[in-house]
Image 1 (cartoon, protein in one colour):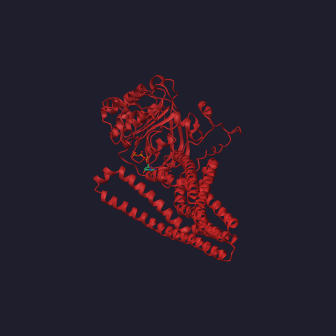
Image 2 (cartoon, rainbow, N blue to C red):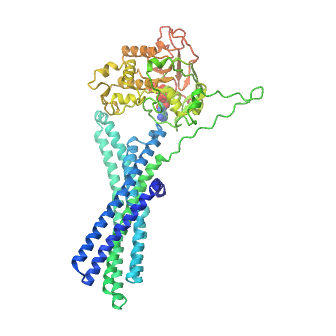
Image 3 (spheres, helix red, strand yellow):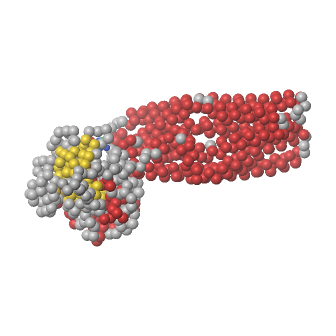
Length: 635
Ligand SMILES: Nc1ncnc2c1ncn2[C@@H]1O[C@H](COP(=O)(O)OP(=O)(O)OP(=O)(O)O)[C@@H](O)[C@H]1O
């Protein structure tokens, strides 16, 4: 782990070397001050001259100390910023599955407290460690040259015990306690984040007291680990102090004997004691950072646990189909023309997915320009699913054998009982999930083979449970299209029937939303998410229950506007609501993860002869999910 941390500082080796050199200078000047004073005392030298020398040395010492700290911290904070960026990149790469494995509060603690924690390594470990070696060797050299070799041997032995042996005392239990404490702190952060997010519900459920007691138990656990850690570190500190005191005493006693035997003069004896004494801060610093290293390593481990998750690999191409009658393999469908211009193929996203999918899929480059005028120029997506099956990790299959065709420009409703797999199908079509069986193609190309940025340009998902950032309304919308001007923002707000509500706000588009959109109604939140998706001007738009919380009149208005704005777009409506079905071209009904109604295209907007629909457009008995079928093992 130390090597891993050091690798991040490699580009700054010159700065760290300069910091270490300044630290050596700073410590050497400390030794020089004491030595000058000791020699002056022993020789009865002129007090004013001695004081003048000490003032000059002290000023130089202060300057060296400043330079050492400046360079060390500059490296530390530059590396911390990079670590945090890498951490965020890794999170984005693993989203949203990472939330399946880690709680958001814990991730926040890793990105903040744990990253801050490793500052110790860059600012207070590398330079002090190098300096301790140089100072111990330099002091021994001085003692050998200016006093007596025996004193040099004693001082080196003391330095070795203090700098090498003492830091190893109880190393394993210290690391274990530090690791446990860091994990517990992550749990505390996650618990606090949950508490803040769910305060209202805790109050409503009368559970605030119980929740608080859980926090108390976690705090108690962390305090226990801190006590265990502190007890061991105190033993080390005491041992180190004893070793350093013993070294100075041994030098004093041995020096006195040498003085008595005429092998050392009085001044050199004093100077030897002063040098050994002045070497102590260099060695105390080693013991100090060794004491911190358990926590630093534990924090680093938690950071790299996220950063080191490998980038998802591009899955191998599907096995070639058996040769046709002529003996030649059937050709693979060609990727769409734009795919060839978007660079090397990457994976279509993580195979593993978390329990929540956050907001519309708005990652990736944006398509700029006004939504409506350019709409006709868009090329609507053709989507096809063949034998698609899916299971969440560790769970039984939720979809099996799904065949589906979404012709370009068509609108498809996906119906089914709650839990029948509608949202999961939506995530698969949006390439947020990857099928465990079968294939989904976009314009003839397997989604798995398409670059992520191409998919994000062509496909948008308005989610059932959208996420809103604590930013302005315009800021949230521009996540989908940073270049969108106000006219375009108002246009999409009109389309989703939200413009009037936003106009009524004092800050209009500049109104700052509360965290998680707490100051929006459920219906407003969903329409904001739909507006974001529309700003992407997708060729395939997947709407997951976005009208579920609207009254009938608002829903009808919204559907009407969307229909008028739908040129060049293939649309999927995942819904329970009959009103949505009035304007669809085909209806797909899912029952326990299987399509129960033929999904062939019925490209008539008149609404006649659509499966699952009565001529009036209301759902037939099988189409809405109020009569759940058996949750059989889909697949
Ligand atoms: N992240 C997940 N991990 C494990 N199981 C999941 C996950 N997300 C959903 N499921 C399960 O998959 C099944 C299908 O869920 P899905 O959300 O696709 O159903 P749905 O038809 O959209 O339901 P609803 O109409 O209630 O939104 C459900 O049984 C659900 O519990």
